Length: 276
Image (cartoon, rainbow, N blue to C red; front, top):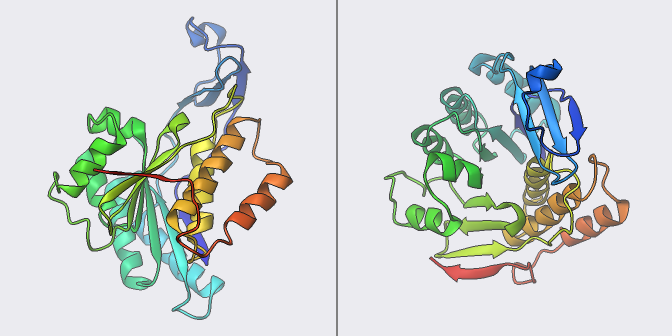
């Protein structure tokens, strides 16, 4: 399956510090347009940036989609996956609707993370996707929800009066060191896959993207159960946090590739199930 990611790419300047500086950064005349502070003490990262990059427009997107579909596959019925960052949400909504019309067989995932976009826009966007990745920080800051269980309860009781049934197959909530919680809309239970605990976080920059990328790598195969794909994704993100950079150990990669060959939904995926 071809995977097409839609978002904004940037070149990051990363500066490693012993711990987060308490004084004013401007006193040291540090550039502020796009800067990442990576703490050796906690492995956390603080991103400072200037939003000067133009967002992708709908017409440019439509043109690129047409080119991609022809370039990647002659068979217009072949499988394809679109992943959208949840930014510039009104425009992204138009893009998703275009994909639904131009490539109705496509799977669509969306990431809800950026706090500058209100929940009423985010949930409308989410209702159009097959798989919804939503961060715990977004739920806390924008929806005033402190647990995945509470969020899933509101989804199941249709608290926001959204039509989740037409497209959405699952809501996926990465929860940092706790692992990931997810709800398949076809069932009544919430699932939790715990993450392995690290003695020390070396670098968390890119861990979320690693999790989502690994999830899509599994799900886009078309036969991997959601729990298996997310268990692998948790492991990928955990290993990423244990090291600098994204060149992961080959023995780990081979293990994950093997794990993603599981085709039996009843095979052990490490998920714990609890009723909402």
